[in-house]
Length: 297
Image (cartoon, rainbow, N blue to C red; front, side):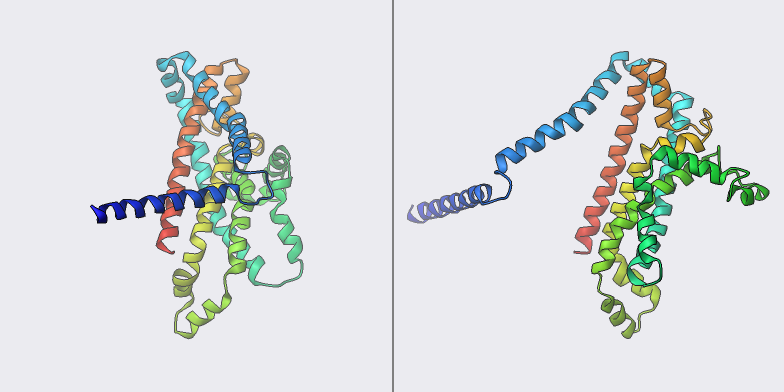
């Protein structure tokens, strides 16, 4: 009985100590006025900006009934827009992952004239209004544009085609990958590569065994950001795509079309499909990030 009482006493004191430590963490000195107030502001802001609007979207989509919802989200025009939106976003994000890594590598590892200008140009899609970007890309890539005039004789149609959608989504997503990978490369010690080379590793082995494990989480994050940004893009795509149903019509444009026709239930139904698929894809990407972080930890 004495041993059991001592064990219970020790366990109780350990719990009390953990609780006291938790209370100290909550009341410790902070620049912001306490955990309770800041947590309340956080929940209030997220509720007003994210949770309530998303909940309203699901509720509005249900007003037409299940049959109407299913018919709306599975009609051929909607399915064609899903394929174009998610397919072009995926291709654009993959291209940006590769090219963004190369751009970040050049900006971090090599000094050259005009480096600061090139570094600033990377952020141009952030500052440029998307509608202006769409008009500019359409002008440059048209059959009589600066670049399009050389593509037309080759039979490459860069505007009013799915290719134009991919180009626009690649344009707006590049900064996300570059700015995500660049800080990781800045703290990556070049001496690790020199050590690998001194041990006989080739360039490819050094990249796979030394550089890739450090960059993999950042590349996944950049890919996820570029992909998520591309899925909801409207302004830069609406001009260059041509907006032809079943061919070059993206899902955000289809939603706008239904809103203009006062079909609010149909617009929110398609929006719900986009939300569910986007959340599922982002969940998979976050799971890969968590797995890669544990693997290379």
